[in-house]
Length: 226
Picture 1 (cartoon, rainbow, N blue to C red):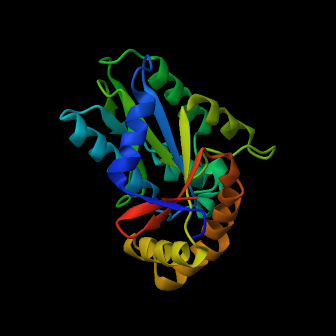
Picture 2: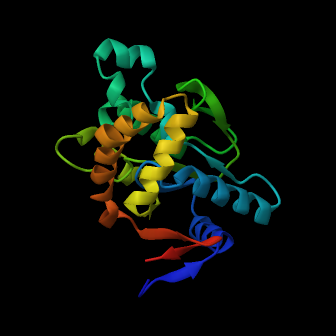
């Protein structure tokens, strides 16, 4: 791609470390992008590279997916079929815990919820953030800022840097179909979910791309910076 620069995962991690060094308290990196973009893989890769280079655990991942409303809550609201859309998350809870992570002293444990893709439910305290001075949070709506979803606009000011992971729509569609089928949906139900919900979410997220500090695309074993 013209004007893009290819870089390795280790180089991206080094970029984070340079920006975090000397900053008091925690450094919060946000990775945004459409569903199926590979945000979780990138976040874990950055965490692992940072910890490997430091020789100790200085980084942790705090996923946005842990703030899915439970299936019971979604069913009661009549929106279970729209799971994954902005209003099916506890955005206020996510913002509040991000702020807690930023303001809490290193060494003081902060339980953070994760998401179990086998049972399709959030897991309270799935990870505990304590000594990590760098926290990588990833999710679809970190850069969302529109009148329809004002609660998400509070996320971006809490992050020191944000990246957007850009992936062509056909690749996203293929990945999401496989994800839903692995999760127990029939191929037909998976196609319906992708067409009627996931791709609509993807379009909403793609509109936030320009708000990121860095835009990345997967390239071989590394990434391209646009």
